Length: 222
Length: 209
Image (tube, rainbow over all chains, first blue to last red; front, side, top):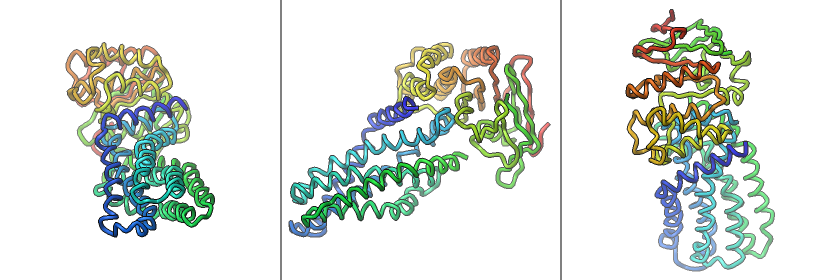
């Protein structure tokens, strides 16, 4: 079962490598959205320091949703999804493998891309560290929850907008705790509670989402 | 081994078939024939567990396939309308992935041998994107051999887009599978010369014969 999980992760990473453009586009999207904020709101350092963490989270959320279209759509269109569902492996293993690979090329990449962004918003060392930690802990939940939406809208026309409408409300807690962790650090308090809640959200969705995703995929494949 | 009991399939407003029963023993081959839209593909997808029948059950080794999905999946190799071949991976990578998920490294060699018998031995390192429709079909069929434990083959129009040499090679693969105690269920709308013992099921629009 572990071998199958690794095979799925390896395959999806290889595909991401062959379709580099898609991955790079998501990262650029994240960076461009964040860069627009100083231009649109104000270049004043105090203002940026205040709204920076929230903006990074909103951009990360949007970037992960933009990338969701790739998650199952291609495998669905070329028939490899139905092959994987019939491979004799538990469907949840396939789903977890695909989401893990998706997180590595979006969530993890966004976490790294946030480092220069922290400098750009002049967040300071400690709040920056908290923001990176919060992104690392919270983005898995974004991938997992987003995958439910991607699976539900598979094969539908106009699925992209529908995914956004379905997924965004469910990710509100991640956004709230993610931004709150940085605010706490900036105010000299401990961000531990917020970070623990973010980790809990990721673990909770890791436990529940695969079940929902498999069910949704079975329905979509009919 | 493979039993379908009292199957009924309704798609939209149309009842494709009802009261359909199938009982296949090891070594048997079932050829499902019928006009376009008669429900051949729907029947195959029901047998593979991808589509739920409106009524009835499919059993494998006496167990309902919806309750034993993993066990059934490892006994089953399915080639549908879609080839399930990733364009961005090479032919070898496609087969390697299949064998890895099927849990047997031996599957890669068997699949590469099948690829050679289907006349694609020189294309192993070529990205699937560069293959023609018929060549992709042959990769999908070679994948059957990447699952050496699959005792049941379900093939949806496997002869489509194949040239004469590949068709003969496929007949050979099917005969080997049957000789090894496997079961093959396939659809084909053209004339096929399957082993004489092959059973034939003709689906008519709305009923069955």
